Length: 105
Image (cartoon, rainbow, N blue to C red; front, top):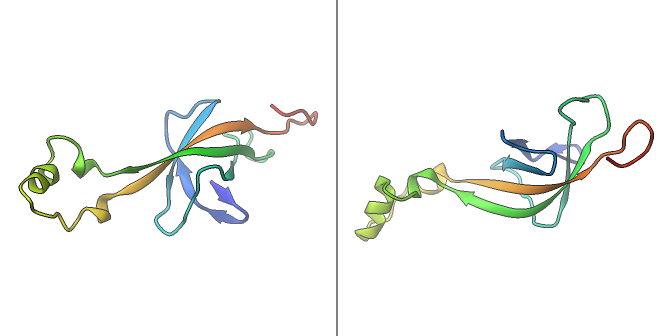
């Protein structure tokens, strides 16, 4: 993910030609409705693919059902490692890119 000269995250697997998810770097911020660009997976030297973020999800696998942190929280204990394991996942709509003929694809 590129924001004028800055990498803000890394594309996750299972992305499609209509939807891309990327994990946000801890030292970066992204926002819903903002535009970002990625290199095309088949044309890395070609034009960037334009994306728009439509959802940002906070993910912490230790807080999934049945995990120790959830059991501790239900007993009134506050797990102190919670934020260290948490990451943001941005879901994006693929808007397209300009092909060699100048048309948006």
